[in-house]
Amino acid sequence: MTQSLLKKAKTYCEDHKCRFTEPRMQVLKIIASSKKPMGAYEVLEKLGQITDNPKPPTVYRAIEFWQEHRFIHRIESLNAYVGCEAGHRHSGSQFMICDDCGTVIEAHLCDLPQPLKDTMDQKTFKPSKWNVEIHGVCEKCV
Amino acid sequence: MTQSLLKKAKTYCEDHKCRFTEPRMQVLKIIASSKKPMGAYEVLEKLGQITDNPKPPTVYRAIEFWQEHRFIHRIESLNAYVGCEAGHRHSGSQFMICDDCGTVIEAHLCDLPQPLKDTMDQKTFKPSKWNVEIHGVCEKCV
DNA sequence: TATTAAATGTTATAATATAACAGTTTTATA
DNA sequence: TATAAAACTGTTATATTATAACATTTAATA
Image (cartoon, rainbow over all chains, first blue to last red; front, top):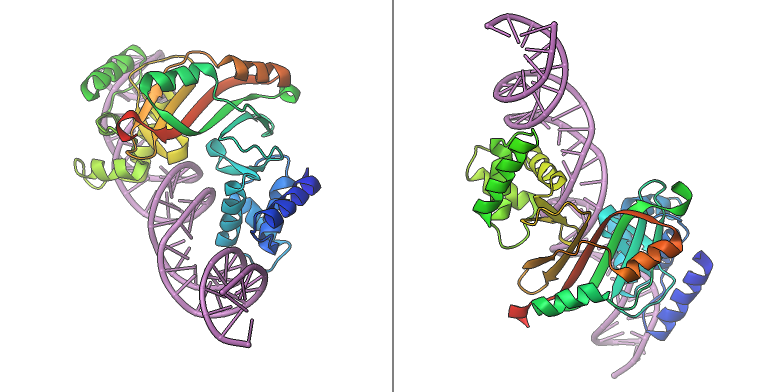
């Protein structure tokens, strides 16, 4: 997905008056071209193969930027990051994480499932953001 | 919930041939008596008020133990831990996290909601563990 | 082109978590 | 009940993940 995501990201930046800079581009490229979620320091290491001795804040800033603009997601249970093509503007994300091969599959539900909505109502809780992480075994690894 | 949870935990240990030791007891007590999730180093600090200069592994070991036996949960998006009275033996957890006051409310759904089950089926993914974290604003903080 | 805003580079350090090994307590069993 | 094995703790050190702070550069815009 690397190329298409980079292109989308570039267009997005142009449209939204933010800069598609070299470090941002490189970091997105590195994360997008990985099949598995990457830790920030893995990204840093990869980046070090391209640019001269980059430092953690470079990576973390770019990660933060792309997260805000939803081109990457953080997998909380792995402290790692994955690219996202979907461009969804809703506030939920759902991941299936294969504990065997490490692959992450993203689902793209737009709405909070009803049983959870019901719980929100019962507790009078106003959700703004939600994340689901499901660990298990993927098709290939069964 | 502190007392009842400690009691449950003690009984559980007796029944399951694991030891209800001093550091485990203290750590569970500290986490259970907090209304909000606590970070490991907050627990460590509290523990330091009771015992002499405890070290991180003491806390992390106890946390790991109680997590395994489901007396506490980790809130991934906060790197923090909360007590759990439910004693559920199923493999899912769901939390509502108030970004205003920090309170965490746990839901207790037994089953993966249908839309997510459907996604699992579509992708032929075999789930073993699932976690939902919903950020938002609680009743009191609206 | 001067000013401002946005972004980067760099140093240092904070926050979170675990490895490794010695020593102790409890449990199992000879 | 002595002894071995297992479970657990104490301690030192260090790994891993993430951010604060400030100087500098780049780009947008007045």
